[in-house]
Image (cartoon, rainbow, N blue to C red; front, side, top):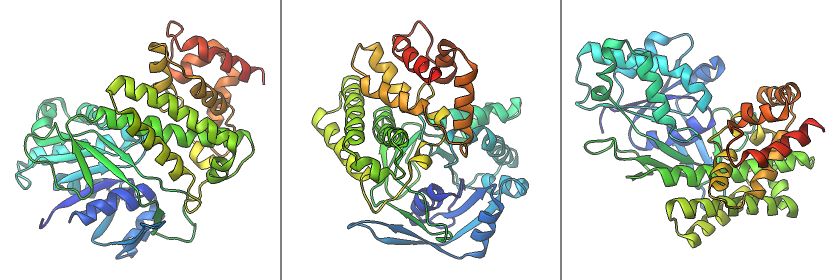
Length: 390
């Protein structure tokens, strides 16, 4: 694929070690966009970095043919990069998408106004975030940021496709530089349906016609399990995720939470129960890998997002409650999340401030989006009352 280019927002560990690596292996020149001055400078000073996979099946991948743009100070240059790109991807966190959408919109506007037929194809946009239908949300933000007269031209200029990503990238050695160490296993699933013809070729991607089961399977299994281990581990004074997973009580909590989300996924999507059980067991094994060290504080950070309405705890627990199905392990994990008190994490500080300021019934809705009439509300209220009295 001569001359193809991808602009990727977020040059962190996932950006470099997962999305950027696969785009590079697909033949794209990758332009990393980030607001971190030191990271951008390091990328500009390097002609390569290495992605190290840990474990028996692991190997090393050398990534080359990349450039870097400071999205905070070089917006004009970034707009031009987007205007001439084939693919735009993000790995910035769902809450950062509103901040990158305007510059993506301006790049698309530049593309529309130039009248150039860029490789005869629409720009393909994928938000690679741990959130349900994150690309749909990004598209809405981009459309809102376009001048009204150009909003109708968006669909003929760019195609937005939802995606689900799965790869565990632990905290990195401070001396690793640009290199990234991660697990060999990965899954990148993208919805094929928005594309009228063939989607852009990206190595390792699994294209599907119905993404919903893959998004919820990943979020409600991998992310639910990871956060369950983190919050229960934090409550017990355990530092490392792998140590939490060797604690019989915590491992049992993780397996119980996965069991509840498995029952939901089987009931909702008709997934094969045995296959989903095997998938859950594989996740437990991945989280227990001693070669992938990570801390409960790092995995648990951002509790406001993790406790929000469609996320890894409230999302499955609310759907189980609506179906009258068990959700006790998820409720115990939610209770543990409410006790996550880490002064270095801004969301943890805000969480504890809300719990101290609001009455328990109000805090339930503020933090989880669950209204009093919802069948999950009576399950959540005692947890919030207990935390208020702690």
